[in-house]
Image (cartoon, rainbow, N blue to C red; front, top):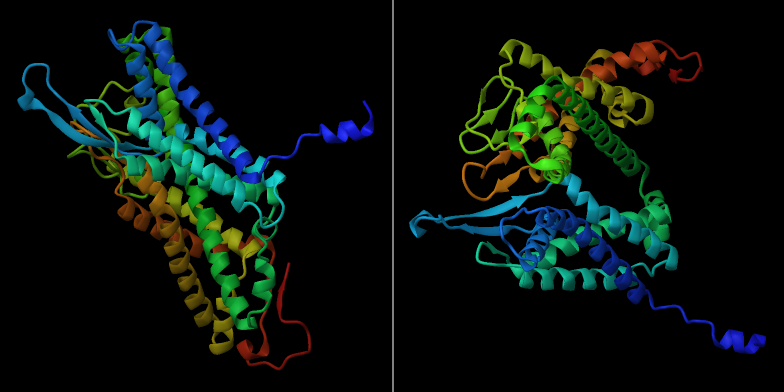
Length: 447
């Protein structure tokens, strides 16, 4: 075959919107299979009573929608009389399982970014979003039954939103910057601002990042505390497994389900260390000063609840967010820019007064940033199982966020004040602060 014929047989590249549709369709199929396989394994082993494969397929679609945040409207009738019918809305995001579509969408976003030129990423994103919306709509129309009802609008919008976020995150990771991804150079736009605006923006950005550092550190410490608590109560957890008698495959599915909610439990532990606590059903509370829970379902990990702790010792765990804030203050000294302190030092001659005011302001600002950053994850970690007592699960998001922000802000003030002593910073005060004449040397800090 000559070169001309080889060039003629060379396949043409697919349009970007078609590539996006294919990538997202593959992600939808893989995530659906990962949900269906455990259900089919349990069904083949004699689980779910005498149900058919159509029931398992519907349940798989319902679970797939649920891990995308779609609320399921439950109607459970009693076996004796219809007067005992219970209704409610199931809405609970197991973060570990939500990672399935997020990871697949993130991977697809990276692949689509490699196939797109600058300013073209919207084309595959639009194609992918359209296909995922169609999958969500068809699933929400096909899987409802007498016990589970689904609003097609939520079944379309929420999965599409999850996938678009994942696609954007993956495309941004591959592009390396928003400028390369969407053609907008943010750094160039910032350079056009005035010097005072840049200083103010730099200070705000440093405060936001310090709040993020404090939040993630507090979450890591809470996760470590949860792991220690599970280790100390491992015998109780194993006893519940034995009482369930679910067999090998049933035990494996229970373990996978618990792994899916472990990040939620870590967030609940974070709310517990803030002092706000969390709920395990209507009328229950699990907090450092008070623990009152009613009958709980036979979930092995619930055996590790922090019950029976003395209030005196429980308050010690409130120091964990303070420690996280201390590390955030240290980070701010090393990596951030405290331009507000510099501005106050020029307005107030007494250095002790300007430093006190700037440190108090820093603590308040970091506390506010931490609370704003924490309220959405705290809210997303809670939910409802729809019926019975378990209609209130997780922390009160706004209360836990405010209390957590206050503790992190308190630690930030101490960290920012104390960390210069071991960092070796030498503060050379200008003549405006000391009242002495300058010797012409630089004023600032010398590490």
